[in-house]
Length: 119
Image (tube, rainbow, N blue to C red):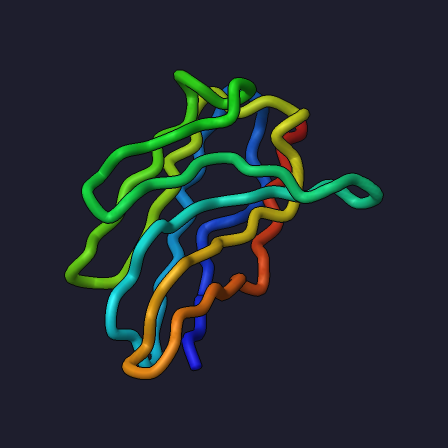
């Protein structure tokens, strides 16, 4: 079993910054892609950013140039630096990680962390 623990959400004014963190723990053999998704109540969960083990990244068009995803492979941690935040970035942000244990592949979601952008 693999657990993901997220932190770093909160309330911030428009134009401000936040940094989200997600730490993976448990029976991990290898971690593959690590990503961040977000969801607004009543809407589908959407991809924000994803990073490969080698550091290749992909971003939603709405966050390009403002958000940066990074990872620390030694610490099984993925980060999302969010700058120039806008009210439309308000959502619950979820970490998602692909992995293998010693016996099988899997994918886990974090519990979600609320990000609210408001004056």
